[in-house]
Length: 370
Picture (tube, rainbow, N blue to C red):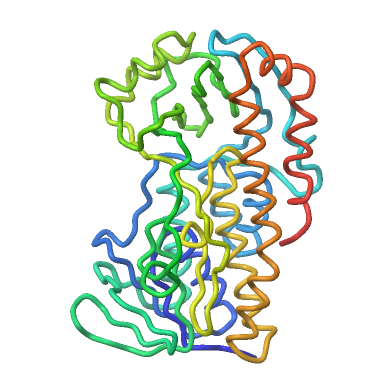
């Protein structure tokens, strides 16, 4: 069995999931995280489609996640006034794959971090930055120390140091979208359940996902030619949206802002180095597949390392297994973003007549195991 000495750079969702998968298979793994807080997740909430929930179950943390998460049984799309455009049960989209859930990023991170710490008997090394990696697996840390590994994994996000240092190529491309995320108290805002997207003109969307416990995850985005926040209070951009958006926006002053980017490189492996999660394939959140693809990366990489005779063979198998699936998600994100930006009457008609059918076709290939 191939059990390389492995360094995982980054203790976010993809890095922790991979650490859990590898240590469960008896691998020797070090995990470093540049942030002093150990990589505690930011970004407010997370919708977990069924393939993400399935991956968490295969990682052995499905029950812990279910205990902290809220079920999502229906998806709805309304116009910005609140008039329904389409609605369906998520079971009709995902079928036998399983349920969908919603959770805070902090809770998911804590579940994975606890599983890694308990399984390894040693904590993640926080406040440890990597400044250089070579094709031979030699790693230089910010404090000047060095070490050599059989395998180095870049799980360090969209601005990955590992990718920039060793892979080169173009950086992530700005998608022309800005977003804000926050968690609101919904105890005084009636009628918020499951997953509901409200679509306006100029690419504006306001999404709510019920988290349970009196909390709702709010996600808002707009089209923009600039990757910087617009002047003034961002919430004014959604002032014409109907209830419950105004009540929720009143709680969004400290929302987490991000300019959305998409990776252009499709090469994620070298002889002893591999990229996973956003370090490999950041893309639009339109399908909520970022977390799911990261979790699947972890499982596929762990499986190929176990099955193949050496690291280069395993990484080649990983690239081959992931490339088509990730490309599908990228293409479907583009398709959905185009639909969202159709002229308002045509967009609304499309959702009314074909909303559920579009969602089914978007997700159909993801029913199969990665």
